[in-house]
Length: 86
Image 1 (cartoon, one colour):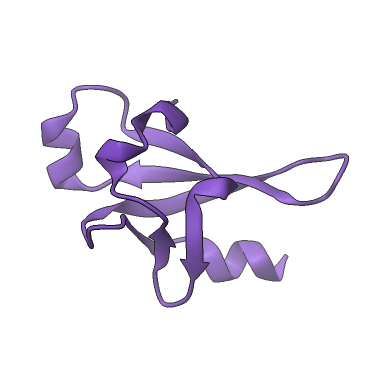
Image 2 (cartoon, helix red, strand yellow; image 1 turned 60 degrees about the vertical axis):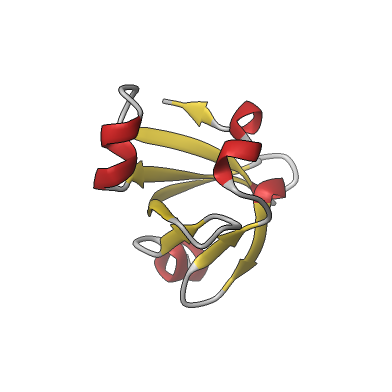
């Protein structure tokens, strides 16, 4: 799957320019075949700040753009309600 190969390993950057992690996997809605969320492995600095799990799920709605890096629409601290620790 080309989408998966293009996205896995890309850095995730929040709206303030902070690198929050790298893409580990993606979730696709089976009925619509549309990208539902990305699963990230947290950056080392983020792991130190948050004593929760090493991975998080970020809904696709939070993504602003995908290029060399994946940009989120907002600063992560403004969007914590939408992020799921896994």
